[in-house]
Image (tube, rainbow, N blue to C red):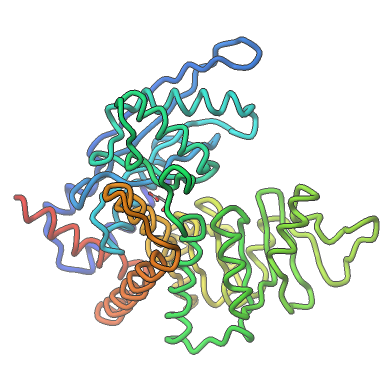
Length: 420
Ligand code: GLU
């Protein structure tokens, strides 16, 4: 089953649980538009290489299309369609006036020089000049795309438009219209969700062991927030492998990041100098990291990490999905039967797009907020979204994922029906 089929299954599970108008469901089963572009790029060795870029515009029922751009070798249309459907649901869950989209390029950006990456990105911006737009479709960072890449897109788009157009993209560097708090926003939003969940499940940070898969922007900030709040972060990993704290007292993610920066990978970090500390820490593969006994497991990397194959070996009490789509529907069902609470991606990682929306608002009004103001606006949105989902979870006696889809579909249905 591909990612889009999985996403449609989630949509159907919610539609079957709630009173949903059939027109709304039919409209939401397909993206509004798919754009595919060919991107010829001059490589450093003089050769011309052709890349393929995509944008899936799923729904603009609630506002301009919104969602990230992913640079990854596995980017394909089924994945992007799933991610664009999830963006549509995510924006509706947090009640921001934006639709859903996703795009990207099938490429391993780590194999490109800085110049090649810039030329590829600017080629994408040119090819998408009539697709993107501040009131049309507003991209953002996603896997392997950075504020710098957002800056190139905004610059190229502005040149073509003949005017500075910061609101065409979010996740930009602060110097050119980015928002304070955007980098940490996904982790910060998830942290508010954890606080709400902790109240419901009576969790105490000191007694709660956390494992996080993924040490990019999202995973790193989340690890830091959890550690600062007193949670015991006992396992961490990046794409090349991870590390588990055998004493279970918890690691300081800042130290792990310092080691990763100096040594290049997390899995090696406890080998300082030539003395390897195999007593307190153990290097593990990403697969094994997910199977570490813990209270909260946080997948913060790519989709399809918890599947039929490994779900029986997951030993967490809670799975908080910071990545998009890390759990397949079959695995989700098995987690439900084992009473493992899954906090779904469309709530857990929605802090990122919420602050993206704040960035867009600030760009449009030309008036900028402090980080404290950003957080002051983010916090109630995340807490209220959690509460609204928790209410539906009780009302419909269903999982938090189905409840989150129900909340999103209620809002989408209102917007779709208002214009019929
Ligand atoms: N890529 C992020 C996500 O999946 C952020 C999207 C955005 O800010 O538009 O939610």
